[in-house]
Length: 101
Length: 499
Image (tube, each protein chain N blue to C red):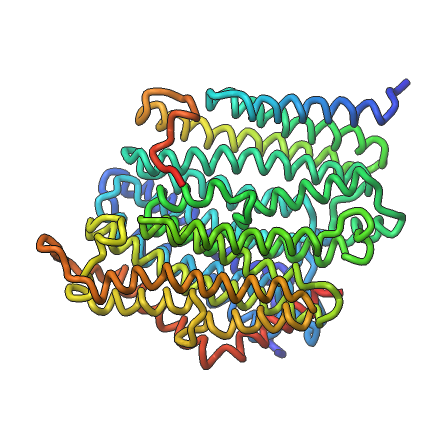
């Protein structure tokens, strides 16, 4: 017994929007990274659910790559946030504004 | 070419393999000398690797690997990678920039404690950029884009004590992570509606009709690529990242990374989502026309107001993304698609040299420590006439004056937009070039006309930076008489992609 496929789309759209909302309102760089993770995982929900529907493994394999890339991205991000904290004594993304257009 | 029958198919990946293995060799070399940075060794390995990649790309391009006359595009790994004229053309651009940037880094990084890391990150990012051009599936495209982006974030933030560098890196990372999440979601929506991620299979599945979900996916993919090429309104990271980054890194990202963004944009929108098929859902030619005009205008007028030379060049680089976007915005079917696309490709080739050169001059100024504002460059030509001459050449060529290849490539873009019957694009291109000439001239005037301040003293003429500047200037000038050859390659490559 499987859930209708539309539900997966609704779920993933909901997770994506939650992540996008987090990106827009959060000031802490770490919260920003978490919100981006939500958005990437929303894509994975779609890929895995529709992999079943389409009867091929492409989606699941890409989801695995997506998870690995998300981890790599966080690794770089944490490094940058670390030096941000050393230089600005804070991880608030709205603090680092020495350059303005 | 007869000797090509003997090479296995995977050898077509040579440019990417050369760069990737060079990056690994740098890791090994760094392990052997962990305490004492070996400037000559690290720079030597990187330049050699870049030259090897460049030689392979040019050789394949000239020999016609993956071109129509030698049996068409080479597909590898069940069609997830493709080597054709377009991927080799962009591999040539990326590897040329790598050679220039690593040459310049030799002097720029003289006191940097993590030299091998910077070289290897540069080469890894370049590997990703070459792979972007070779990808023929959304999976490989996404992985390659990430491989080029992730090292770039670290490179921009690599001056760990410098607040500007950290800030630029942070903004680049935050917006980059957001846009790659949007791109991933867009790709997942394409998979939802087509059941495939390989470019050819996606195009086939489109014939069954284009639904709203796929349309949303296409828009999200467009936004993801818009970030890579730094087109307005996805450009906000670009001025910050280019200004904060170390000079050679700015040169690398603004030239090579932009080219990589464009090659995947060309391939996906021209090849995978053909205009005739998706027109009803997403009119991407119209979207690109709007983005191109807004990008040119916003960037050039923002550049007018800048006091810092590097930031001005950053905006000029955003503006050039607008010019190149004409290559997709003018694909209305009125003009020959191969000509329009080829004009954009060849502009990227010329731009790679003149823009890298201009940013390397900024790197040279940072190396001398003479300041970043336009008035800091006052009278610089009395101290360093050669470097200032090269910079003048780059700036005038960027503006489109007939002193470097930039003249012909802008002319071709103009012809393309006129032939495609999009007068607005042609007008925007000409007007913005005039505006850009104004702010480029301010720098030239400062260098040659103004009197130097009393404390202006240039104590060194670093050999690596000077060589890189000379090479970039030489190629920029040579592309004036040699433009016909370059445009020939671009048009042949574009013919294979345009349906």
